[in-house]
Length: 97
Ligand code: FES
Image (cartoon, rainbow, N blue to C red; front, side):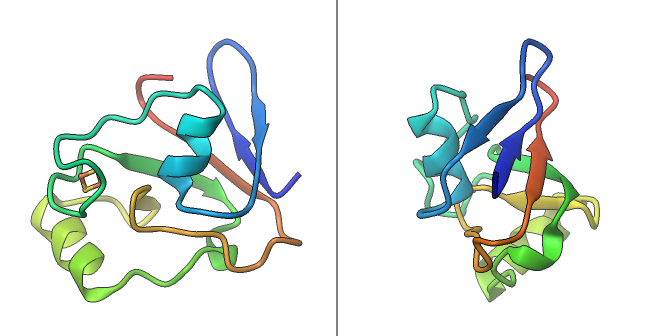
């Protein structure tokens, strides 16, 4: 169960290939966006509950935007972030699931 989305209704196991945003959307979980996943709006922030080490390192675009919006150290842009260690468990959530 590499990626688990924690929701109020029920937790959902997701796949491992693609951005976190794409994985969530493929599972029917909404991800907010105003830039269609281009790393410009920060609406797609997710909170990483555990497994952050199994995610891709933030690139310069993501680091700049996370800093600009004052994101917490446990938050990532789901449109810019991928799982790089598919054997690890990663738990994420949002404020609106
Ligand atoms: S969808 Fe806009 S930054 Fe991710």
